[in-house]
Amino acid sequence: MSETPGNSRLQVTRFKLNTLLDITKAINEHQSQESLVARYEAILRKELGIGKIVIFKLAGKWECILSSGIDREQVEKIDAKKDLVRFEDITFISVENDQVLQPFDIIIPVVSNNEHLAMVLIGDIDEESEGVSPVIKHLHFIQTLSNIIVVAIENIRLNEDNIRQAAIKKELELASKLQEMLIPDPEKLPTYNALKVSAFYHPHMDVGGDYYDIIELGESEFGFCICDVSGKGISAAIIMSNFQANLRALFTSEILLETLVEKLNDRVNESTKGERFLTMFIGKYNTRTKDLIYVNAGHNAPLLYNIDTGTLSTLDSNTVGIGMLDDMPPIRPQHMKIDNKLKLFCYTDGLVEIMLDGNLVEAGTEHIEPFLTNNLPLSENIIEIVKDHGVMQGNASIFDDITILGFEFT
Image (cartoon, rainbow, N blue to C red; front, side):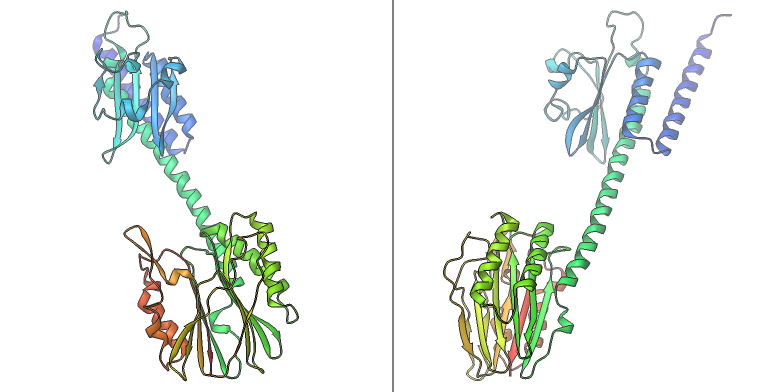
């Protein structure tokens, strides 16, 4: 008994329904992009008799994820961004279209949220065969199937991106915790007679390239430093961690400050190969003799406020940054006798440089000085400065780590 047209249409409808159910099941089973694309190709080529299939998928950049029934050389001539994205609806290719599209019959854009996800090119292999072209006969089904497959592949990509981002976030959280262990807790800084130490540390990202430290060198002497690694993020944090280990290993009561700086320069050059450097303000203070010795290696000049006289001065740079040169020029540490009530305010450049309209602006210290030039405790000054800058409120103009190390000599 011959098959009636009604039975034939019913069989086709059942085939299409079963195909969509099978594809949905494969998607729910979290099959790979490669597996879904292979199923799609088999359905169109073997079941529907489609001759040529090409899919260009956007994932950061346009790339071909399927090329079937056509020479690869012909596909490589197609620039998806130039030749295809201009088509927003299903379009039949005519002789007026670009020559590179002539092997195909139709373009099916896959669009989501008004953005192109993919462009599907379909063509028959036998242009001379009689009857309705399978491309025409099954156009809406091909469009539906293409949309389902492309969206599923896009979801796979987004899910993989989310997994990668979650892994990176977890690693950054761990790196942040490890870095916090290397930097002294501002609440647990050492205390001395007639001297109060205050600090603030806030990385712009999860980890940063700023660093400060207080190192006990003896019963009445300690060393200190504040530094800023060039660059940001993980690479700067790694250099900072390496620098912290070297500083702690080298900084003793016996070592001369100029020798220490030279050795640190050698260690930084060994680890960065000249690709990074850091600025540093480093010193020693004797709480018994009240002698301060320091070297400013290309760092922002700390502010020194004399409470007794009401005068403000700076401790300017007296040598280059660490890692800028293979060999440091002659270093001459500066000496001070602390015989007045003073505030020494050290900071990194994140406090005085802001991003305004996409441009880096040197704000200077004018907006900091009024917070220091008073008789209030330095710890309160720092709290007010941080508050005024909106550091903890996510001030959009701040684009770098901010670190403060302060000493109040009473």
